[in-house]
Image 1 (cartoon, one colour):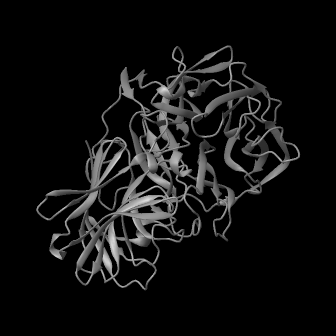
Image 2: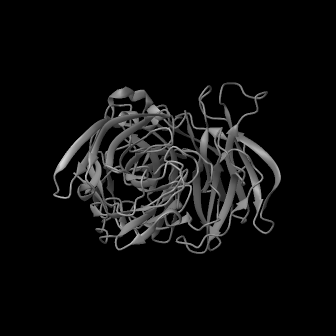
Image 3: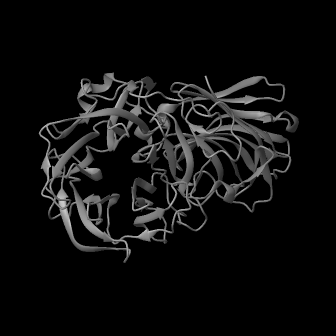
Length: 525
């Protein structure tokens, strides 16, 4: 037996979905506007997770151009059936996004979870959070959630969980649609993230309620048929932290998925947020694990505790993960080279905006800035620790006059912070800029000699981000401090955690130069 700490996937790994095939558990999570999309992870023990690929990992597979932050790839589900892995997901364009390519729910399959995955099959079903289930006869049941029609809604943001059969041979939905659930609690918003599972001849419908924030909760219903009618558990919600108030540092558990281990034990993977002040969570929605038992035909989450545990006792030994391959912490400290699977880019693959070069990145300058929903030159990694130093060493010899490169703390187009060098005739203008709700404020400005560029980055300590310049002698010069509370989803209204990365822009002018990030380090304190 081994005791492990929650979360098992720290940083922005929301909406986990999990299945087991043989000795391996397989998991996917949401990535929104970032590519490659939908990381596929596997684990033998629920503790160490290896990223073995991404579902959306090649140019042209999906078009995310014009999709703003917190749009994109929502709440995928992964299952295994008939020798193949199946993933269903939603590509969402939020209000105001300028997009023209297909959007909606889609299905992909693969013989191996590491890929390659098929091109998307678009499904004639609106709404979000699709899931997929298979019955004993081999029939396939797609389901998801959507807002109830205004004429039918009993309360604001009431949702409906729909179920419909899918024909693999015809690659389309067939038969009648069935509305099977509107939530366990009357008046609760967003019955979402539904997962149907057939367990001992009973169909269980697991769903989240209350919105994916402080009031988030897990509810469950059961039926003898995938199309209902469904009976809700009188104990619903079977998991929530909202009744605990603001005095706890893990809030908003929900969007759970159930999985049975090879030894017969049951587990739930779900999202929750670490918020030391009970409210703000700059690391985003993270993946936690908890034990499940069964009583009177219903699952009991975290029996005896009734909340997400800080530590979990696993009934098996956990083998230390091989260095350099596993998520989250065995790879976390030190330089992150371009081949690392943690690198992502908004709306494009990292290789489409930068190229690997001797352990670093060459970043051709782009017209777009971090404030644009068109593809900009930015590559970054999730912030996974509250206390961490992240720095990028820069070679700006090829940067043209008026162009800027540097380090960014990214939440969205409307909310981010940068410490960047702009080439001028006098040298490099070093500036710290914070963008809040679409408005920029310069917090520091100075002129730096071209021979003293060195490194720039952040020293994060809890909610304090100290933007810092380290000169070529290694001397640190704090430039400005900003609050992580101003860059989390509570303040900005999105669904994401914070990313640390490197960027290069010409601010709309014709690009002429490039920057080189010679080394990117991420050092948990």
